[in-house]
Length: 116
Image (cartoon, rainbow, N blue to C red; front, side):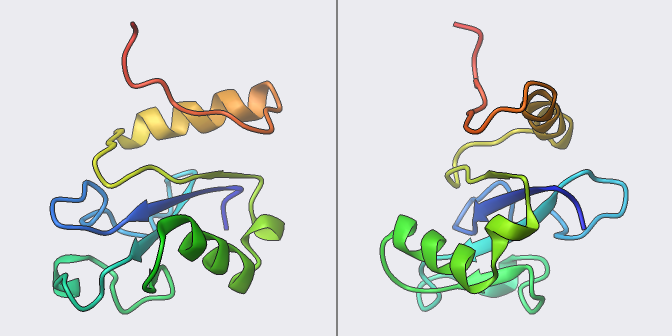
């Protein structure tokens, strides 16, 4: 298990739908969250039948809170990033963000998407 976790929204056109949840050489894990299981075809999501897929109905942050508590994620990971479905970083950029957080021992941080 990695020390870093990405909790990504699985949605129509979501950037992280196709990412495999477990990838041995990647320094972060990925959980895909579906907020609309009745309105979104989960077959479009890789790993939708794995423990790395989670679906619930309600407000996004309430769902994240339930997921984090149910799976004890705060005790399993040092850093967690929760991008919106339309925020996309390549794996190397996510890796760099987590690396900076680790290097400076940041308690909270957010990726910058543009230089300006």
